[in-house]
Every structure is written in C-alpha cells, then in structure tokens.
Image 1 (cartoon, helix red, strand yellow):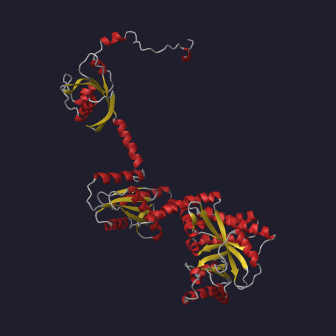
Image 2 (tube, rainbow, N blue to C red):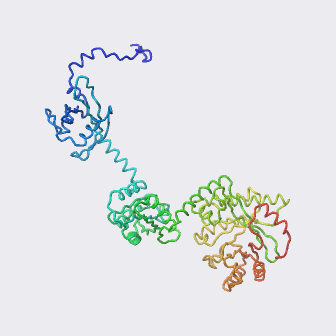
Length: 581
C-alpha cells in the first residue's frame, strides 16, 4: 500500500455547523447517560426555592455521597460542598474549581472539584454540573516529596528549610505564655572532618546518626532538633525562664555527648562548639535568631566555651562575610598591595632588608586592617592564594629594585607564613617558583613563621623548614616569647633568627620584667648561635638600649613605617651606607 503523508491530506475549514447526525444522537441521550460517561464523580445540582438539591448523580457520585439512586437528598454530602455550590450559584462566574478533603477508610482522600453552569433555555431552574477527580495518590506523592525536601536523608531530622517550617508551626499553632520567648541553640561538631578523613565517609555518617540520636534524647517536649549543615545541628526551644532554660538544655547536650562513641574498633569522643541566641519576644524573625546563634557558635569554636549572642556579633559576622567576598574579588583582580617596613642593622644603622606586609584599600570597605582581613582569609581558606600572591609579589619587587639599581641590591625581603597555609599548601614549591620566576637568589628571602605553626605539627614543620633551607632561604621565628617554644625545638629546627614580639620591646624601658625577658631572649639566642630582631622600636632610646644589649636587628616606627615599593627603594637609596642610629 502506498503511504500518504499527513501533510498532503486536504484540510477543510472549521465551521460552527453541527456534525452529521448530531441532533439525532442527542435526542435519545438523557442526563443520566451523560453523567455515566464521566470516569469520575459527576452530578447535576439545581438551585430553586428549596435551596440546593441533587438532580442526578452518576454511580461514583452516589456511592461517594452516600445517596440511593432514587434519592435527591443531600444525605452525607459535606456542608462544604453545599456552601461551594450555593456560593457559585449566587455568583456570576461561569465555572469554578476547588479541592475537597474527606476521611476515607485508609486515611484522608482529596478531590479536585469543578462547577459549571448548564444551559437553561428550556428550564426555569438553574442547573450546575459538578465533577470531582480523585487526587489522593497525587497528594500522597507530593507529601512524600515535600517530606524529602524538608528532611535530612541521613538522620531523618528536619533540614534547614524544614527547621524553619517547624518553628513557624510551633509559633503559630501553640499556646505561649505572655512572658515566654524562644531560643536557638547551634551545635558544631569540632573534629568531624578528621573522622571523615581518617575512617572514611561511612564512619562519618554513622557518627552523625549517633550524635543525632543522643541530641534528640536531650530534648524536652516541644523542642525541635534539626541538622542544618554537614556537621551542624540546631535546636529550637521554648524558654519560659529565659537564659536559664537555654543553659539547662546545653548541660543536657553536654551530658548526652560526654561518653565516647564507638566506631568500628575505635572509641571517638565528640567535641562540639555551642552558641545560643534568644528572642526578644515571639514576634522576632526566627531566621534572624538562627543567624545570631550561628554567629555565636563561630565565636565558640575559637573560645572553646558556650557563647551567648551579644548585640553587634551579627554585624561582625556580616562584615566578615563582606570582607571574604570582597577579598576574593581583590585577589582575583589584583586589588591588594605590599608595603615594606625596613629592617635595620642596629650596630651600623644599615638597611639589611624589608618585611613585606599585605595592605588592602577596598572601594567599598575602605582601608581594611591586616589583622581583620588575614583572620578572615585564614577562616575562609583564602590565606593560601593570599600567601602565594605575597611571596610572588615580594620576589618580583626585589627583581624590580635590582633592575633600577643596575645590580643585585644588598637587601632581602621577609615574607610571613600563616600556620594554615603551611598546613594546606606546598610552601616549598611556592617559594621555589617565586625565586625561579623572579631570578632572585634564595638567600635574599626570609620566611617568617610563628611558634604556633611549629607546635601544631612539628614533623611537618621540620620537613618544610628543611625544604626552605635547601633553597638557601633564611627562617625567622616571629612573635617569639608569646608562644610555648622550648629549647629542644629551637635547637633541633633550622631556625636562623628570633624576632622578639613588640609587646616586650615597646615598654621595656619602663617595665623591668619586660627588660629581663628581652635580655633572656638575647642570651638564649647567643647560646644557640641565632640572630635576634626586635620589633616595635619607636624611640631612639629603645634603639640605643637594644644596641647596647647586643641585639642584631630592629624594626619599628622610629626608623620608618611600612611604605610602598617605590618609597621603600628611595628610602634605601637615601640611607645607603648610612651608619648611625
């Protein structure tokens, strides 16, 4: 048979003329037959002086409504339907749709209902066609999907969105005393990442499930526990007695997590940081209180104590977020600069080098203190690209100075290393690249590390320092005297310079104890064959006193404040071979 394309079939214009035989077909079909053809509940209602009545219903409607076939009584039809039909009859609308619920044998049933006006040319009583489609299965699917969207699949607790809905439900549908308030308790598992790294994600999941069960056991009736992040939980609590109730719950949490958790053959002790925020009254925005509790828990992670939200903490958190966002852009777009503070050889007054210090002047935030943005960089992980940029830029600055001078200058540059960068980055490879790209000899760069970086992981720190020494770089221990270094570590590590913290130097002429500490550090350095740099020299008297004590090098505002690259070069040229303090 030859196939014919649909496109080639003749198309006739559509008209309003009835189909052939249509009138004849209608003559023998009654209302009952039309209604029986519907695959769902259907009925015709009438509205007259007796009110709303059922004219005819199909078999499905009769069974659902509890009617007999020959009855026009409304029977068990819910008053809601009667009200809907009555309201529709009094309106001017041609159609309407709504959903109805009824209690079935297996639980609630849901129906999508429609109402429409029937032609009344030959009838004095208005007639309305009613249909109802069973949507119970669809609603069950929607309910299950919603449950999945609002709950955590691992612990079956509410997630962040579900937590908000649970709080709204408690606030709107519970009876609260006049003086009642609510609180949010945020909980952060401190060492969860180590469990994941050491034992694997399955063990991490098992730990979270166990912690969730224990936290749930510490709740009171009406409290809500949720998992709002990877290792973050939160509790919504009614507080009839304010802070004392919140602290009581915190004590129960600590007791619940006090005993070790067994994972495989190991027993893990769970440490957590806890932050609390209390509402002023029941009209407070729950999301705002949750953010305050999360701000408090961040402080608790640093302090090691339970923290209660204080006014201003949220603003600080919002500023840290702004700094992080703007800092990310600044690193990508070259928005930071290095300032250089001279290092002075105290016996001769010569400039031996410069310490490179990061500076940031943002278009929106203005001048941001290094103390502030470096702390944010360490917290957010941006310290790694920041540290790399500083090392590369400092080496390039030396190369540019050499080009201006016409030969290698007799100065070097010190670059600070964050303990977090040392832990996460390949610092040895970073400095090797910085030196190679700039063509600078390793002996002209000094890495400044802190005592805390060595204490955190002595073995890793030793390997790193050996790698830097292989590049012929010098190593200075910054802020010496403020940490917990011991003689054994100083003797075993390849350290060249001790930098005395400015807190000891600044007031040593007035404070005898500070002067004794400075003398002790100088004596210790001499016995270990280490050089010493004193920070915070702000007067000539301090410079002369340190010179007499035998201090090798100093820096401070007495000599110069940190300056830009051009000014630093000019400063060195002006003082070249200048030999008096």
